[in-house]
Structure formats: structure tokens, C-alpha cells
Length: 519
Image (cartoon, rainbow, N blue to C red; front, side, top):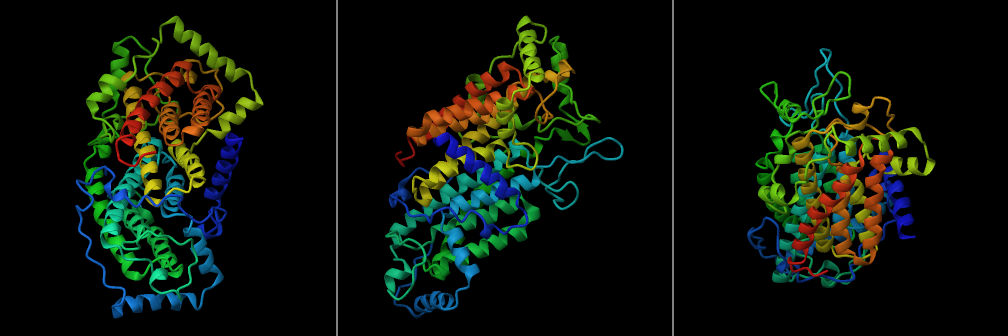
């Protein structure tokens, strides 16, 4: 039953994402208001990811609750509440579901919007999105799966670090919420015993503002609109006064800059594999031919350069590159000259020739192609649905999402390293009679990205929610086999991909078991 529930809600999420004519406040109101079962008020002692210490960035002491300025801020809340509109009530209800949850949804919407490969130029070449000119065609970014995994990871990890810092200062400053200071303040969300300064929601907002404008520079107006709306919702609800918001937002922005600096130096900018007009990736084809193997060749017309051939060199979060090569990179796939390869090709051909409605349902459900939040986004939606039922605190939401997304970013790096190390052809390239039931990705076959993402996600989610571990494992297996049923991957691609993803996920589990948050 849990699995069925997940499936239904993911389909609903997909519908919401593509209902582009609706404002975010008009959808997803069915999520309950965040009312943590546990405050996690010791989160200021948890182990951060990039911060050297929770007090690395200073937060000024708050003004006293009997100061004239504070009283004026209380009156601002009352002024809002005296003239609330239906739209404002909906805004409060929408954001009350949780800051991390809502900004993760917004990220998935942005990824889906930009997950469109550029159309070819008149001369048969393909343009490349440029962060230096993000509004030109093709708009930056092209939010393909590796890019999306990296984006989800940076935002989630920064939110976690910022909230660890915020919770440190909450305990230190210990300023109560407005409704505890003035009993005449109406409270439109569940009350909390957590100190309100600095605001945890505003801390998340500060991170989102800084990192999303880096990752989605053409959407800054939209991002700022959502940030303003979120801040107003906290004041309207009676949860925070203006100075709570200002302190939290400033802290979030300061922490985000540390992640921005990391992102600018993590080698993702060179992942496209083109420098000075030269396609550097062609060395992979040459290496495959030298080894007497059939090299991967783009099946698009005209041939498109492969997606992010150097993404395997991007800096990981959970382990170093030497670990990736020595302990995680899989062994070579079956030789394209071997009987095993022939056997696996025949299996793909079987699924291509023998249509089955249940297999097609699985293929369609896990397709996650263009204009979707990508496979990592799909797993973010799955996690969100599961976490909502747990009544996690904001900081635990952030910690869990950071673990999930760091695992999937690192899974993408390991997967892309394997793809371009072995440069294995797709089944329909070797046998053109094979009909695919889903889009054919424009990059080598071994190992399966869906399988690697899913193995990593299921492993860390199974640790976080051990009672649902079997459900997550089964979902990962289904996501993986969907690529074989869709006739775009061999069995070795999906089976090894799952194993590799599981290995990556164990590094996230290792971090989770030592970060001080418990389980």
C-alpha cells in the first residue's frame, strides 16, 4: 500500500509541475502545516558539510522584546492580520507546509522548465547554453540529469549548513516567538517552543536566493517573487517579526556564498567537453576503437555531442576522486565481441519485440525525460512524500534532503565516469531493428544513470526511514529495470548501476551515522 501511495502522489506532483498556468499557491495545499514531532533544538551541534563551525558567520544579538522597535514589528504583524485576504491566507497555508519542502518543489519546477535539449543550428552543429549569457538561446541551464543532481545537492547541502548555524544562534539568543511575547498576536500556523531568532524559514530563503540565481540565472525575478511571498507569509502568520526574518535571511546568504565558491571551482564548468571549439570527448571513441570495441555513436540526426562527457571529473561531496576510481568505478562491461554481449542484446530485442502493458506502465512511470524534474527530481518527490508523514523539523528535513541529494550528485559523477571510461554503445545502435519505448539518451550505455541514481537514493532513504527500506529498494529495482523494458539498456547496465548506486549511498549512510543528528 505504501508503494501505491507513493505512485499516486508522484503522478499528482508531475501534473502540478506541468500545470504552468497555475500559481504555486493554488496547488499542493493538501500538505499539512509543519508541526515537528521533535524540535531538534540541539541541531546547532550537528556536523555541518562545508562550515568550519556553526558560528563561522556572525549573527548580531537581537533587540529586546520590550524595545520600541520590536513593539513596532509586533504591530506590523497585527496590521497584516487586520486586513487578511483569501489569497494571503492561502499563501500562509502554502508556505506553512515547510520551507525546505516548498523550495525543493520550486527547484523541481525550475529543473523541469529547463530540461529541454537545444535544437541544432542551421549548419548541423548544436549550441551550448552559457552561464555568461543565460537569456540567449539556448537558455542556461540545460537542466539534464547530472546538472539537476548537482543543483539539488548544492541547494540542499547549503540549506542544511545554514540551518545548523541558525539553530545554534536560536539557542544562544533565545528570543521567543512573537505570539509568546504578545498573546494578542493571532497564530495562523502551529505554535512552536523553538526560539524565533533567527528565523529558520528566512535562513532557507537566503540560501535559495543566492544559489538559485547562480543555478538558474534567467529566473531571478521568479525566485525573488517567491522569496518575498515566503517572508511575508511568516510575518502574516505571526511566526516571526521582521528582525527574525532579516537575521535569518542574512545568515542564509552568507552560508550560501561558501557553497557558491565551491560550485565555481568544482570543475562542472568544463563538463561539456568543448574547449576553443574542439570536441575533447572524441578521445573516448578513439580509446574504444583501440580496444577493439564498438564505440558509442550518437543516434540523433545530425549527431549531437554527448551529454557532459567530463562530468565524471566534477568534485564529489561524500568521498574523493581516488575513492571513486579505486573502490566505486565498476569493472568493464561485457566486450561488444563477446557471447555475453550478444546474449544481453538479444534480451533487449525480446523486450522491444514483445509489448506488454505492465512493462510499458513501468517504462512510462520512470521515464523522467525532457520537461520533467529528471530522475533525481523524481526521487526528491518520493522522499518529500515520505518525509511529510514523519513530521520532521526544518533542520532534519534539510539534513535528510542534503544526504539524499549529495548521494545522487556523487552517483551522477561515478556513473558519468563509467560511461565515458567504457564508451559502450546503446542496443539500438548495434541492432537498428530494436524499437525503444522511451527516449534514447544521448550518451553511452554503461552504466545506467536511472539505476545508479535509484540505488544511491534507495540506500540512504532506507537508512533514514528503515521501516520503508524494502519499499525504496523495490522502487529502485523497478526504476532500474524500466530501462531494460524500454529497450535502451542492457542487463549489465542496470544491474551494475544499482550496485554502484548502492555503494555511493553507503557513503551517505556513513556520514549520516556520524553527523550527530541520530536517526
